[in-house]
Image (cartoon, rainbow, N blue to C red; front, side, top):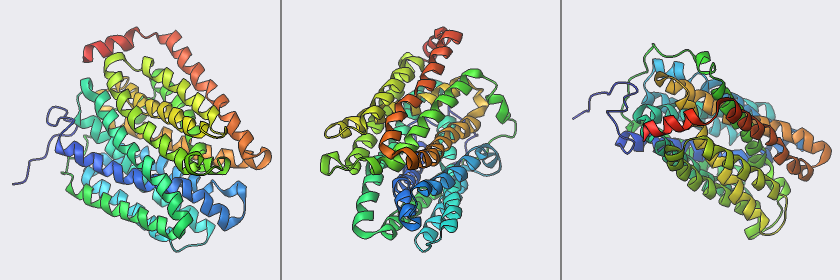
Length: 400
C-alpha cells in the first residue's frame, strides 16, 4: 500500500529517525562521496593538463559557481517539484558531468562540466538540508543536523584518500568511474524517497532571512572558514610530501574522521548549551589545526585532527544558528544560504590561493591561512558584545 503524502515541513509527521530521514541521509552520503572524490583530484589533473600552477583551481571554482547558483535557487525548485524527483535530476547532472570528465582533455570543456557537476551537487545538498529541517522539530534539530552532518562527512574520510590512491595507481579515468557509481547509487536512493509535496508558495522572501544581522554574521564566518577548507582540500597535496602516516592521504583520512565525530558531538552540545559556546571554541581549534599543516612528522595527523574538529563543529553550529534566527517557513531558504556559504567559500579558497602561491610559494601561503581566521573570530566576539548570549541561552532552554 502507498503511504499518503505528508504536508510540507511537517515535523510532527516524521521523527528524525524515520525512514524518510534515513533515505535523505543516503542521498547526501552519495552526493558528498562524489564531491569529495573530485575535489582533491581535479586540481592535480588540471595542473598536468595545462602545465600551469596558477590554473590548478579554476575547475574547482567552476564547480563552486554551479553549486552556489543553484543552492540559492533551491527554495524555488522545492516549490515547483517534490524532493525525490528533484534529487534524481541533481544526481543525473552529476553523472552527465562525470561521463564528460572521463573523455575530455580540453580545459574549457572541463570548466563547463565542472559547472554542471556543481549545479547537481548544489541542488542535492540544499534539497537534503531543507528536508532535514522539515522533518525535525526545533528541540531535536541540533542532534538531527549533527547526524546529517556526520553522514555527509563520512565520505570525506574515504573519498579524498581513495581518489588520490586510485589516481596514482590507475589514473584519472578510474576516479571518474568511481564518482559515476556514486551518482548512480544516489539516483537509486532518491527514487526510493517518498514524494514529499512541494513547499508552499507562502514562504519568507529570500532576502528577508538576511535581514537578521546574526544570520549575516554566521554566514560571513562560515564562508571565510570554508575558504580555508577549499585551500586545504585542493592544495594540501602540494605542501605535505611525506609518506604513510605523514602523507596527504593520511591527513585527509584523519581530517575526515575528525569531522565525522565533531559534527555529531556538536549537534548534541548545541541542543544542550546553545550555539555560541560551541562555535567559538570550534573556530579556535580550526585555526590551530591550520597552523600545524606545514609542520613535519606527526604534526600532519594532528593538523588533520584539529582542523577537522573545528570545521565540523562550525558546520553543524552554523545551520543550527541560522534556523533558530529565521522564520519556521524558511527552511529551504536557510538551507540554500548555508550551502552557498560553504561552496562559495571552497571555490574562493581554491581560486584565490593558487595565484598567491604562484608568487610566494604554497608553504608560505599555507602559513598565512590561520591569520585569515582572525576576522571571523573578531566577528563572533562583536556579536557576543552586541547581542549577548542571554537570548541564545533562553531559546536553548525553551527547546529542552
